[in-house]
Length: 255
Image 1 (tube, rainbow, N blue to C red):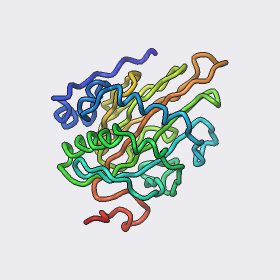
Image 2: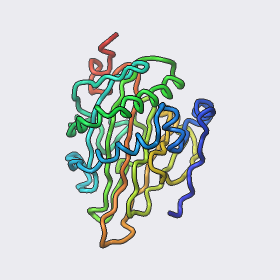
Image 3: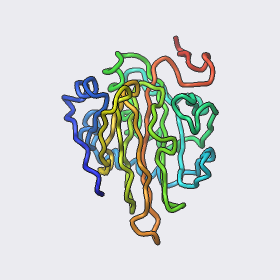
Image 4: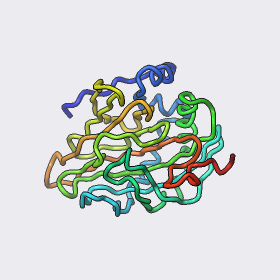
């Protein structure tokens, strides 16, 4: 890949880095240690990316995105699955797919039962607590595969955007037989930006969604005769409730 590698942040500097710049990248070992895991435990999650149904909501007519979706409530180290719900974003944050309720197939049951899964969610929720203060976090989990079925795959067809949450975590799971897929992060209030390529499995980009916007450039196959794909896990943490089209769905049901 021609894109530069990401600058990595040590675990001890994570919260200071996020406070200073609004983003940080952890390598796989640092992410695992932050969550109290071994990297081998994270690698055991990858089979859950092998059976993903097509995204039925792509408005650009593409066939390049497969995904599953699940919701959780994280309170300290307590991680509980929330009832299935539609993924919803306002048009202000997603001009292409905002304003509609998008229902996706649920996460495979074995993923939630895997011992590493709640530790991963709780660990990333601690990052959100470092940004906004300890509280209950409403977490949406998106298991993505972007492939080259159409010759090109678009990880972010909506372009540079915010998600309308507090923290976004983009975990690189696997790149196979593709070029492109450059990550770009920009200050939401100015022209400053950085570009790099996430490549290491289970490295993670962490974003303060209030301060930065982000996008990932399209992927293409290295060999047009062979399939290629980019697997990621996107986790979003939001305080006060899940996003929804009305105030009732934004409130904290446990408050």
